[in-house]
Length: 187
Image (cartoon, rainbow, N blue to C red; front, top):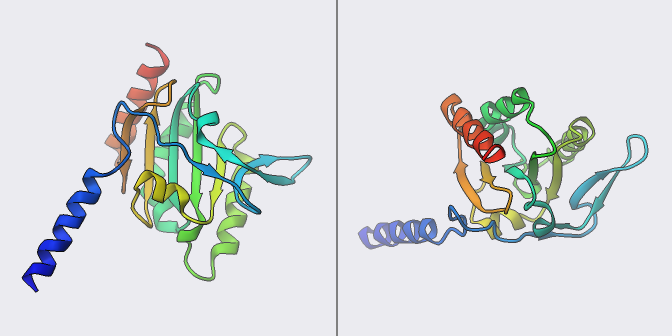
């Protein structure tokens, strides 16, 4: 039994070391494509269409916070302080953008349809934000993120990682992100 505990501890430590999210490194590329998944684009009126998503075409160019969020109420509340702070800051959209990747494979059984509908409502409401629906967990797997969580990656204009955090965001965490965003926008 003790050997099993040691093996579990080693595998957890190795998975933490093996994370591809390294400060100063570019965000590992992510492509999501398929029916009813990928980049959500606003069409005519209230219509939405799904288009292929390639992070290499989106992440560089602006200071960006990429939010990877499980399709669960708890994950949304974990990052609420950060999302509220970003909305209240009214940052210049020509220099800053939020990218939201929703992990639809993390939704609670029976709620996926409702979660997707709420996500599509957010797309219609927040025009300056880029939204991606990931129903197969490709983002979580590619970026080595925990399941059922809220993660925020802050990247510079070149798409290099400045800061990454998963879990519950405190008011201090949100303010630290805002300070760094403003510093990156006004070097």
